[in-house]
Amino acid sequence: MGLTKTYGAVRALDDFSIAIPAGGVFGILGPNGAGKSTLFRIALGLVRPTSGSARLFGAAPGDITALRKVGAMIETPRYPPYLTARDTLKMLALESGKADADIGGWLERVSLTHAADRATSGFSVGMKQRLGLAAAFLTKPELVILDEPTSGMDPAGIQEIRALIIDLAKIEGVTVILASHQLDEVKRVCDRVAILSRGKVVAEGGVAELTAGEARLRLTLTSPLAPALAVLGDRGEADGPDAVLADIPRAEAPALIRALVEAGVEIVEARWREVDLEGVYLKSLGQTPTAATAEGAA
Image (spheres, rainbow, N blue to C red):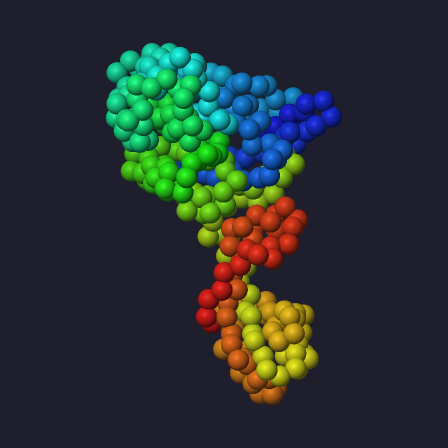
């Protein structure tokens, strides 16, 4: 905890602290340079922190016993180009002490059976990602760290890998830490998320928890906005020439609408505008979540 990692004048992690619970899928979000890959490398013992400490299954990073419980795919995986997909997994299984690993089964689960005996030098980026996923899950780890696991995949492949990750977490009990730029992917797959910015955690919680309380009531009017804004006070603001936004709990909506009608405000439509995960992400980074809204009838 309290991790700091500097590269010259750059602080990749800045007094960083987080505790990731066992079970489920934990998402790590953040722009390039937020510290995601550095965090993973420290956890796996690949780099040392400048200060602070990390623990993996209660052990120091790099502990062999702890690492045998972990599978990982950080950035685009690379393999000896002369090896086939099957031989690559055999090599990794032997190195991990799991010579009995179900290589054929994992090639099938990531849809690489058709390319099992082809040299990886001819693989596309998406195929290499699939092989990297098979390698990460091959030894039946308790924890898997995945950095942009669907990079380079087509929409069908992304959907397929999402389903695989959910099955592994929900059915087989694997804890998955997932870093991704695809906010829709995180929303569909993750139970909890942490948003990173400049080496710090700026928001953390369940997806539903982070987006709770972010709804605003949008009222479209035919009458002038001034009377409506007078009723709303500091809880309202204009949203274009014919609508206002109200920061109120859902339970107060009926009373507010009655008060507006009594004040002579003519309401054409009332809809809840909810900020989704993208909105929370942008807001956490200090940006305006203008396009990250979903609306539903009040």
